[in-house]
Length: 37
Image 1 (cartoon, helix red, strand yellow):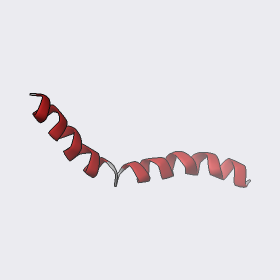
Image 2: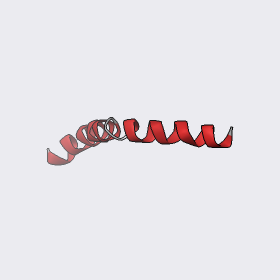
Image 3: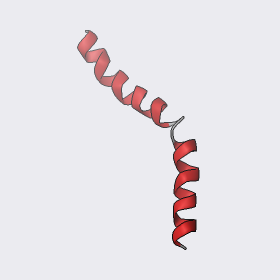
Image 4: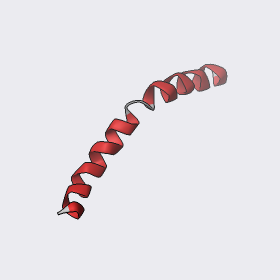
């Protein structure tokens, strides 16, 4: 059971972990193209 729950939970945790990370990555990517521009 824990293995089956780990499956669906992993993808959910990954999305949640990515949510708080995008805000920091978005500004970084925005500065990258600006510097290249």
